[in-house]
Length: 346
Image (cartoon, rainbow, N blue to C red; front, side):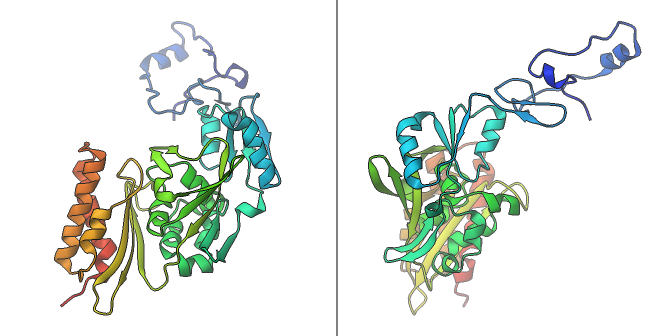
């Protein structure tokens, strides 16, 4: 193990270090060492940025950041109306705290909304299934109502990160971050979820499908919060979510997809919604696949062609990047696994 920065906590961020004398044993050892590239090493570890890590493993954070914790939604919205452009909202913090430590977060205020009760409710209403934006992934994974009415979303939450992350991360934060690999976005899209946003100007609703306008770029305004999601019930339908990554567990998805399908008494697909994630700039619904599958009884040839359409659409959206060499067959293979339980074997 090589010590990257042998310096005291008080020297963090400076070119400190004790110069060895020529000819000394320490100097000879240093001459034999190879330089260690700092490519992709976090900025706080290289001594730059606004964060700094000491030899004891403790982090120092910018002293000008102010932490605010409202007790009601009204208080939070009032603060955002005044300071929204300088504020980052903190719910689970699984992404934001990393940005703060590394110095990538430039916000002047951190607004902790994790203790606001109305953001954590899970209810069945006249509009459908209502999931508070502050509900954690673990709460969604064990909710009986969500298991019955939004099975695809619940399956995605079972495979989301580690138990520690699931206990902390929130569905609202996962959507608001607008990451291409966000696990909850494809399931929310096939459930035709609507995000309810609140701000000083009132309430507005947007389909979750339109919530991400680019990689890590959300349509949520700086003075707004996602309050809840409303999903259409999906009882008695086949639903599945699958993803693949570079390892078997705790992996960031490289390709993900979700499907929600219903069939008639003869086995033909009556309605279907299909969404891709991770392999496109933003998770998206692929209507060409839906149109192809509707009205068909699924057999191996139909599923194979559906996979080809999905892969072709992925390349059309993302461009033929170097990753297409493995993502194209990965999309086809994952699509086959996704729909295989519906295949009618003669």
